[in-house]
Length: 365
Ligand code: KG4
Ligand code: ZN
Image 1 (cartoon, rainbow, N blue to C red):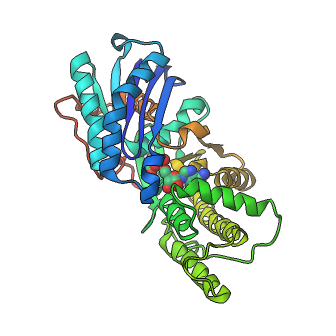
Image 2 (image 1 turned 60 degrees about the horizontal axis):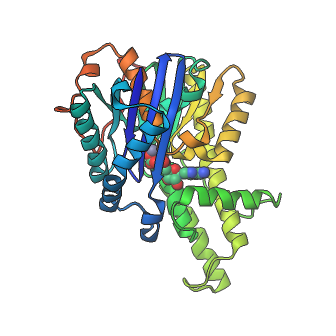
């Protein structure tokens, strides 16, 4: 089965052609991502209407390139998959409109995919044969921070989630406080790494919110505020004004302390949940899964504390928003879902939805 995936939930316009011969072989024939980072950077974050305008401009060329890179013509496509929820409505509408139009014109089945389901299934692109259920997914993106249990394909139980900011949002806000610009996550990681190479003890320690709280929920807004107070205190003791740039050594140390604190909570809660729910595989999903510190420390801690649990994270190119993950999720949803929802998406009925939760299973924990 050959699937054309389309993704426009936020600030990346993406299209991909994925071929799946069976549940154990996913072949990404093309994956094109046009980033809008430069357009949104001057605004310090994503501007929904600007994102929609760029998607509208880029969608047809990106889809055309994805088909050309895969050397396929529309008749060779069996199904169209589009991320239709959740996201920025003006941005979502562009991808959904394009997918509906193509489904109508080419007479293809259409399937709407939850963006986070796509992020989770990015792990199946390279590890389809190695992932065994039950799976615990640590979802870390700009809009979500969740621990999701999967006892089977496409059924999800959210066992924990953030009570306030998503972890990616916290990375972005802390980057703004440290004057590192947008997007913040990769900048924080780079500055934290610069501190690590010094092999010095960090003079700053930041709180680990909700680490001692029972359950698997998270909170990151207090951690972000702790960074804000650390910067204010530093400025006060240095008699800095708001206009004096923060010194690089200070920025590196605070970025490092923040990354350590955020990852520490994520890792410890993931281990606890993996133990509690007897997960046989842990996967990382979402934009923050690109973070090297999180990937390596989660892997190392799992190896040490739960050596029988497998761990996978997507290849770097599939960590951020892309359409290969949408097409991959669509394949598993199409192949494994037996209920009628599988067939309900058509060019007439498919809608973009700003908010939505992952489809839940009936299993109660
Ligand atoms: O999944 P994603 O691309 O978009 C959403 O679905 O939200 O995630 C974007 C988030 C942003 O907050 C970005 O700062 C963060 O992922 N991010 C990172 C890294 N690369 C991207 N955070 C930490 N370290 C990184 N290397
Ligand atoms: Zn995403």
